[in-house]
Length: 127
Image (spheres, rainbow, N blue to C red):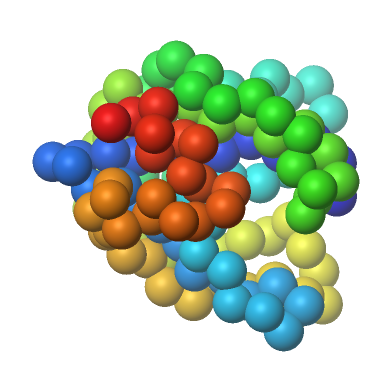
């Protein structure tokens, strides 16, 4: 899959997650996706947040940078300084043929995600 970027949108102790269906599996992830050619990781996080949630975010500090076995590549996660708009489930245009579908947006309390393998290091950093 390659290098990906995401953004943690946190509001009042809750974090916005996107449920996706990928290869028949349902996954809760942070809004994010592939970094396009000529784009920085921060720019990709901002673009992906808008595509998937309808929110315009101001990207803040980098809170995680690590290799992900699931995506077989680097994963960068930023904290949103601010988010404007009303969250609404968007689209994910990067994968063709319906291999990935966005299904739901949901606010989770940070403590609900402490066991989430990919998200827990980010949650620990935000607490």
